[in-house]
Image (cartoon, rainbow, N blue to C red; front, side, top):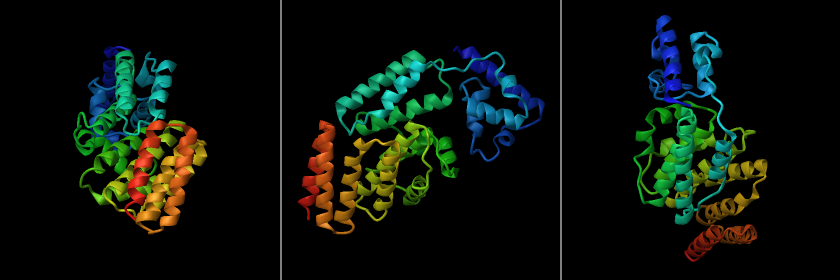
Length: 303
C-alpha cells in the first residue's frame, strides 16, 4: 500500500469534515476512541487508520464507510498476522539472546510490511520494540507518558482495554519497576485490569497476563506486596481461560512472594516455590528455570 492511499483517505476525511463545518475536536468528542492528534495525522496522510477508527469517523461524519474508503482495500496479508502471533507469544524472561532475536524479527516486520500497516498495527510493533529495548538496558527509551502521551491519556479514560492498551500499560509498568512511580496511576490500572472481561482474541488475553505481570513486577521491585494477591488471582483466571498452563510457574512464583513477604507464611511460600519449580522443569524453559531458582534461593534465604 503506497503513501498515496494514506493521503487520499486523509484528504476525503478532511474535506468532508470541513464541508460539514466541524472541528477536529468536535469529531473526536471525548477522545476515548480517537484523539485530535490521531485525527490530524490521518488527515495529513501520515497515518493509515484502522477499520475501527474509520468506522468511528464515518459515524461522527454521518457518512458511509465505503465513502471514506473509496476504492481502497485495507486487507493485511495473513503472513503478517502469523509473524505477529509468533512475536507476541514467546516470552523472553529478560534473556539477551531472546530479546536480540525478537528485535531482529521486528526489523523484518518493518522491512516487509511498514507500507501497508495501519496506525494501530504500527503502534503494536512500536510498543513491543520499545519495551524490549528498555528491558535489554541497551537502549533506554523515553518515558511512556512522554512518547505516547495522547494514547496513554486515552487508556486512562477507558473501562475495557484493547490489545494496544494492554501493551502500553505493560510498557509503562515495566518502566516503573526500577524507578519512582505514580502509585495512583498504577492503582488505577490494577483495578481496571482485574475487572477486564476475558476475550475471544488470544493475543489480547496473553497481553492482559503481560500487563498484570508487569504490575506485579512493580510490587516485587519496590517490596510492596499489599495488592499482589488480587493481581495473581486474575492471572490464574486468565491462564485457565486460555488454557496456557506454561504461565503457571511464573504466577506461582509471584504468589510465593506474596505469602512470604506480606503474609509471612514461609511454609506456603516454600510450597508454591516447589510447585513452580516442578512445573517449570516439566515445561523445560531453561531460562525461566534458572531465574526461578535464583529468586527462590534469594527469597527463602532471607527468612
